[in-house]
Image 1 (cartoon, helix red, strand yellow):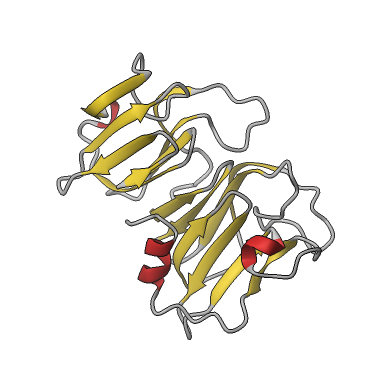
Image 2 (image 1 turned 135 degrees about the horizontal axis):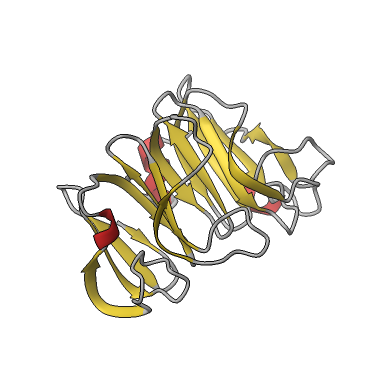
Length: 217
């Protein structure tokens, strides 16, 4: 399951996807459907076996059984986005298979089957949540296609409004980047644009991190 601000999505055991709620930006994945009080099958993905889904206020991502990534709603990483009413494959993956995704308000993370981490989206507030700039250099506000981060062996991911989190295997280290206050740092510190290990953070398991962030694969 996945829940946005005013809509919800449900993946069945067979991999079919259902959506309901408010969808004026196309986040339901059905052309001509602005709102539905009852679950409707996302017909554009009929025949596609969905393995994971994540959504935010105006954007939805799904991963199919082949590891391909689909998106609909207001596209991420575009300064003047035009709503995509139907699911479309995410460009720029170059055949890389994705295992799961996490969506923030204006950015997303994708975890590949090999444990690599991809990020894209907008960061006009310069919080550093895209993790693409060095300390003190938050000029990269727009990443239009998924780009790799310098983290490997990632087992779980989560995305907030102004920060991102990832857990790695070897010792269960939790990594975070973006707005300092969202990461538990003192107010007034510069945004942590590079992924930084959160000292003393020992989640019981990556699975628990996923649940606490509101994304369950």
